[in-house]
Image (cartoon, rainbow, N blue to C red; front, side):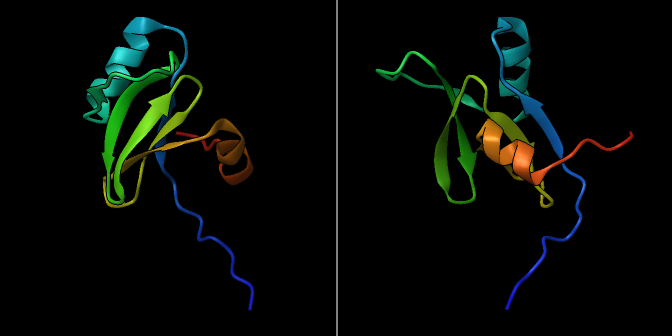
Length: 85
């Protein structure tokens, strides 16, 4: 069988190279700074599946149950489209 994803409006913010905005996003999703060998790792998000790393360019999504998780830009573009506020 085939299935279609239900249309659900989510809130999302994209990490970029603006430090102040990225810090606001980290606070918004209760992220935690983390140490890593990779220079692009910005912080860790506690998700329903466990902690995940959020990197520059990732989208941070608030799910339908209020949970947060990172999403790669190509997956985000293929899955979501903007809606009017």
